[in-house]
Length: 190
Image (cartoon, rainbow, N blue to C red; front, side, top):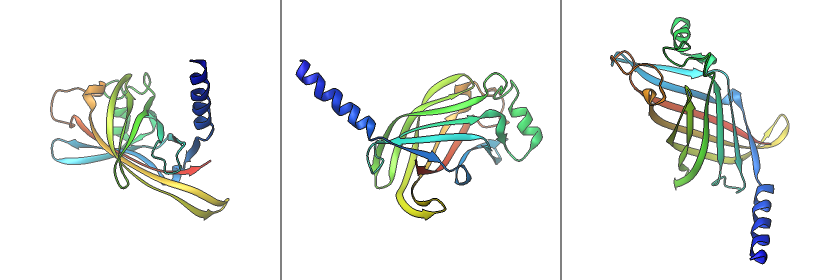
């Protein structure tokens, strides 16, 4: 048994040693959402302050692991009054729950550049599993200010019910319960 455990431990440590980290290029990334107001019009919003990381040990990133954190106080819907209301206990309760997080649990190729990105979304103190449709582009190597850099793009979309996370009330039709998530990220290999 000891003879079997040693090689397995060695393989696991080698794969961890070859894992590559990719940092987020915030200037070319966005964490956004869309809701429907009064069943009539769509309202877009985003979080101005956020960070994300990508780690993978395979060159094609097919084993990628993602994590994301967004600052609830940075919510922006292009309307200061609405943004202020979204931060109150009626909605996000930013004083009590200042961050939103997503930690991936799997990244499975569907076809070509298309993947299913599964993970745990935590918002308003509630953690629920979500599955997002993702498109991975790259990696590509390009010349930048710091010499050659390897980059990759990730776009992920999906729909959640805000009331599953305790955000807002379920009564009335002022704001749709369904929220479309839109994540776009450009990552640079560290």
